[in-house]
Length: 161
Image (cartoon, rainbow, N blue to C red; front, side):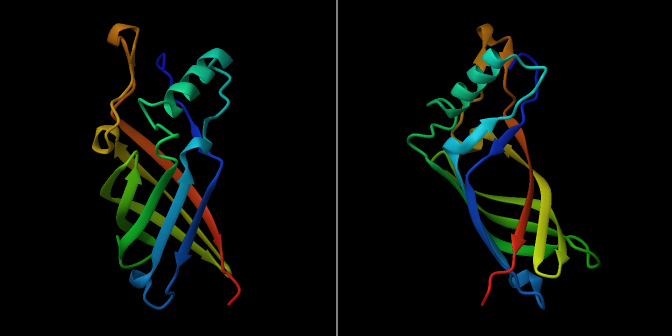
């Protein structure tokens, strides 16, 4: 809104990683985010009134519609190496967002440390693929782009057997 890039944070989510350390391609990932927990992060360049308006619009019926679609879910279907050396992979899976399910693929970097697994990356999503019409305001002079970038970093800890 008003030419700003907004940072959105997920405050409530859960997930599971099933890691096969011998054959990582047999591993899987699932993630669920409470859509109502997505919040516009504090930005000193954006007035509180504008931040609240962005928050209300994002949660409202025209975008996430958190009341009717309370969960955003991802389940991997395939994990493959981007390069034979290193910890760079492509994850492919089904994303359920706003009542639409679509297959997506994105790169992820894994870092393993004893009982911890850190995954990070960026995925670009197209809102219209999920039935979301990008927001326009001020007679169309202010627009939200159809493509959004989701930057993520997750830390998983090995569960006790």
